[in-house]
Image (cartoon, rainbow, N blue to C red; front, side):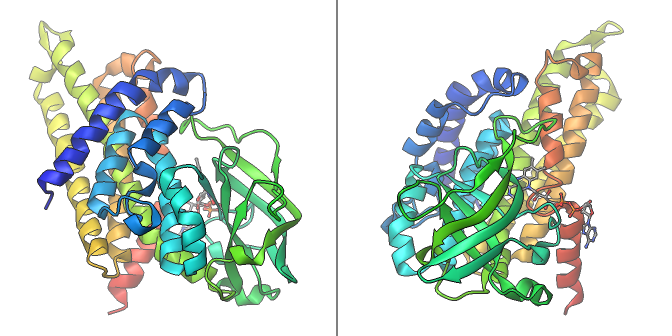
Amino acid sequence: MLTDAHEAIRKAVRDFAAKQVAPIADRHDRENLEIPTDILKGMAELGYFGLTIPEEYGGLGLDYASMAIVAEELSRAWLSVGSVMTRNLITGTLLLAHGTEEQKRRLLPGIASGDLLTAAAFTEPDAGSDTAAVSTRAVRRGDDYLVTGAKTWCTLANRAHILTLLARTDPDPKKRHRGLSILLVQKEPGDGFDPPAIAGEPIATIGYHGMKSFSLSFDGCRVPARNLIGDTEHRGFYQLMATYESARIQTAARAVGVAQAAYEAALVYARQRVQFGQPISHFQVIRHKLADMATEIEAARQLTYYACAMKDSGRRCDLEAGMAKVFAAEMAERVTSEAMQIHGGYGYSLEYPVQRYWRDARVLRIFEGTSEIQREVIAKRILET
Ligand SMILES: Cc1cc2nc3c(=O)[nH]c(=O)nc-3n(C[C@H](O)[C@H](O)[C@H](O)COP(=O)(O)OP(=O)(O)OC[C@H]3O[C@@H](n4cnc5c(N)ncnc54)[C@H](O)[C@@H]3O)c2cc1C
């Protein structure tokens, strides 16, 4: 159940999003511009990069429902802004659960404050859903690892200060998930790190503008061994899978936000648009579309809050997080498509933001584990008992 404190958080983030994000979202999307620094600064001042990081490490120490509310409301204005903070929450969650005390003290305050932005470098050209197939090598040489390989789809690689990198520390590829580790690659030169090369231009996409994704190439890049998450090699796959619970909850919340924006736009349009001498909202078929959209959004929202409650109680929640993610992502695709339908031809024009919601919603079924992979996670859990 949400409390008054949660509602206060919703009000604050709504105000921020309405004043700072909504007014620039359409133009930045259309012109494929990056999220303005002012917005990142504003989010940092409100503590959004460290929502669930405990106060002792510089965060706000809030619960997952608070995080879901902020992710939802920012995404309601622009998915990319709702997403930028979730990068830091993923790395923060990884460090909190699996980092050494020294790593937490050294890195979490910067991540929580937003002074350090992070990006996830998990996917490779030949290893997407099959995370255990990652082939980028990290070879220990004295106090360093030397990293060689290629990553792709690393979103925010150009602006992030830290790349959260999944690499193979056991040379035997047959070890698959048992041979992987996570290294934090800091991009500042002069601190013992060699940053990777960003290979070429950002990957051109149909949506999710504002966040640019890159291919990366590592050629013997030096990463100090103190940045291996935890102090044991070959634990990376398990660390990542445990972190996916929170990543999928965040993604479900973002999907709810995008769908809510599309639904609200459709509601306004249906009341204003007159055909056959009356607002189209008088036609039962349109009313029922709106009713279905509102119902589906609320179902996804409540499923997301349920996964948050499970997470906050410290229980395993890969099942609930997977259910929330797959349902919310697919719901967002349906709802944004129906919102476009209600706008008729205008919905297909660039004049109305509904096309942005529809293009943005589509990616939610793909990243943080595709819908097909979520169903595998769910099926595994329900069949294992
Ligand atoms: C805009 C965007 C941003 C991204 N940002 C990041 C990022 O910041 N960091 C990062 O590391 N990655 C990122 N990704 C990559 C994303 O996580 C992958 O695209 C995703 O995991 C799927 O991998 P893939 O594209 O290689 O598809 P594949 O794994 O090749 O899948 C292709 C199809 O086969 C299906 N499939 C695969 N395996 C199975 C199976 N076992 N059972 C049933 N179906 C299966 C998939 O569901 C999919 O439909 C991003 C992707 C996009 C589009």
